[in-house]
Length: 542
Image (tube, rainbow, N blue to C red):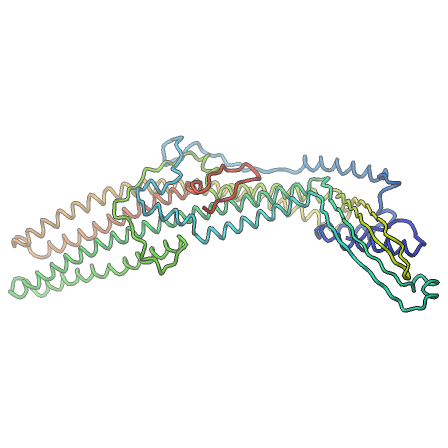
C-alpha cells in the first residue's frame, strides 16, 4: 500500500525531508492490510493523481466522496437483497419405515445399555485418550483461529513504529549551507497508524460468517470422529467377545472329538471298529482343531485395535479382558427422522458447510461494489541539519480511498460463478447426506430386527443339537447305533453352536451399527446444546 503524501508543493528542504520521513514511516507501518487491499490501493494510485487521491477539502470530505459513499450504502442494500440463500428441499418423513412411531429418543450413553462394565470403561477411555480425536481437536483450534482472523478485518488495525536517519555528505560547511542536497542531516521519529476498511457492501461480514460456519463444521467434524471412535471400540470389543466365545465352543468340540477318536481307536484294536472308522473320526477332529487358529488371530487383532483406540499400544493389548458376564442386546429406540438431522455430526457438518457457502456467495457478490479505506498516521519527529537542532514537531497524515472494479477481464464474474457453483454443490451434498443418513438408519433397523429373529432360531437349533448329540453318544456307548450317526450328530452340533455364536455376535454388532447410524453418544462427553449459528461450544477433550 503506497504512502499518502501532501498534495501541494513544498520548497523548504527540511519540511520536505520531514514529510518524506512521515511518508516512509507510513509505508513501514502499513503492512497490516491483506494482499487484496494492497493490490486495490496500488492499482488505484497508478490510475489517479496525488491530488485525486486525497479526498478531503479544508478538513472536510469533498462532495464527490460523500456521493460515492452514499452510492456504496445503496449497493450494500442491493447486495443483501439480491444474493440468494439456498436451503435443502428434502421432505423428511415423520417416522422410520422399519420402526414404530415414537417420540422417545435413543439413549445418549448407549454403551451402558449393554450392561457390560468393561465395555463402558473402554468407551470412556477412548473418548478421553484417542489420538485421532485429539488430531480433530487441533483442526478445530485452527478453524477458530481462521474465524478470529476473518472477524479482525472488520475492525481497525493499529500499528506503531519508530525510525532514525543520519546522513553525512562529507562536503565543506559552505557547500553544505549553500546546497540543500549536500547538507548533513539527522532525524528520528515515532508514530502510530490506524487503518480500516469500512465494510460498505458487507463483504467482510460475509467472510466472517463463512469462517464462523467453517469453525462450526470443524467442531462437528471432531464430534463425528469421536462417535466413530466410540462405535469402533464397541464393535471391536464385541468381535473380541464373539471370537473368545467361539474359541471356547470349538475347543470343547475338538476335545470331544479327540475323545471320540480315542474310543474308536481302542475299538479298532479289539476288532469292534474298522480303520475306515478311525480315519473318519480323525478327519473331523483335525477340522475342529483347524478352526482354532483363525479365531485366535481374530481375538488378537481385536485386542490390538481396542488398545490403539483407547490411546494405548498393541503391546499392552493382553491386559484387555472382556467381562465374564452375559452381555445383553438392548431394545434400541430410533426416535424421529427430524431429530436425527440435529443429532448426527456428519449432517451438522454438511449444514455448516452450506451456511459457509451461502456466506461466501454473499461475499462474492460484494466484489461488484465499492470498498472504502481510511488510513491515519500520527507521530512526532526531530530534525538536525548541519549540526543545528531544529527541534521536534508533530506530524499527521489522514487519507481515504474509495475504489471499485470497472474492468478486470471477467475476474469478478468468475469469482461469483465459482461461489454460486460451490453453493449449489453444498446444498446437494447436504441433501445427499440427509438421504444417506436416513437410509443408514433404515438399513440398521432392518438388519437388527432380522438378525434378532435369526439368533433366536439358531439358539433353539443349538439346544436341540446338544440334546441330539447326548442321545447319540448314549446309544453308541450301548452299541445300539454305529459310528456314522454319532459323527453326524457331532458335526450337526458343531455347525449349530458355531452359527448360534456367530449370530449372537452379529446381533451385537448390528445394534452398535444402529447406534452409529442414529448419531448419538458424543453428547455424553460435552454437556452443550447444538448451536444454531456461530458461537458453538467446542468439543470437550475430557
